[in-house]
Image (tube, rainbow, N blue to C red; front, top):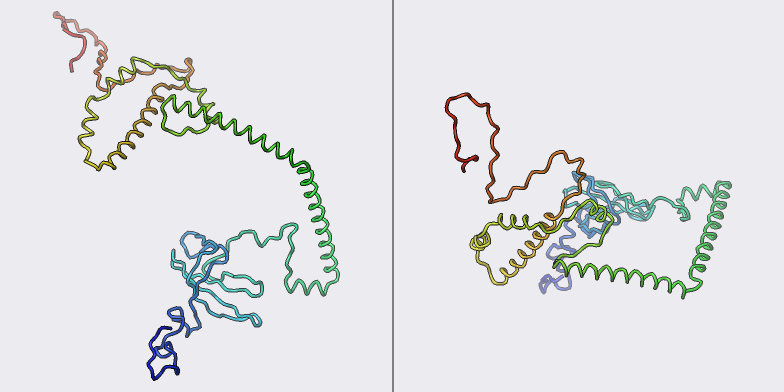
Length: 336
């Protein structure tokens, strides 16, 4: 198609035949071997056995497959579709099964078990040709099959009648059912609105820019094991003393210059992170686990404050040596 044909060959020979090309192009590179490249879609999920670890190929995944006729089932041809798995480079072959009107994996993979082949209660079993021939030749087998079909039909009818009766009983008064549904929704809406108002009030009170999750039973149980203290002015003063004076100026001087838009966004992100860190630090500082005083054997040491020098503990006195002179110290602590 679209190939040049000289005037002397026009109407006598086609352009593809004149140039030695196939009408299907590169798809027919192996047409001499009876192979045609087609677009094949996976009929069901399979496990690739060529991969180092079992890898699943989902239903509907498409491949460029080599289509080839490999046999016949009576007058129906059997085709094989051979494709390469791009993840591992292994070959997978799937063939048609005209006898069972299905696809069969013959190489490089196995079908994923979805439980579709199992016959459940109430399902109609499709008989094969051998089973049909057996029923024709065996009268007792045919009779047993009829009895089973009759019992299954009666059970299905009974079940359908029960479901229909239950549905009619449940929706006998549609207005009442609708009223119950609206009442349940109304109560739930009031509860949700109340919880949302409490959450919004708490966020406004604490100036929180965070989303609060709903309360859970585990949160209440853990909160009972925590003691929340008030504001300790000594701790607040110690925290203020421990902070460096010029840290903000130093950090700002070390930062690289940025664009106006990027700097604003950066400042907003840093402000949000700092606010979150301050809230966590404040809650952690005002929170201590509830402990049994009789189980506390040793008192907890006093916290050390950064930037504050503490007096070193005095060494234990050594046994005095009897001398004529007595040493007199000016101070009772070591100098720095």
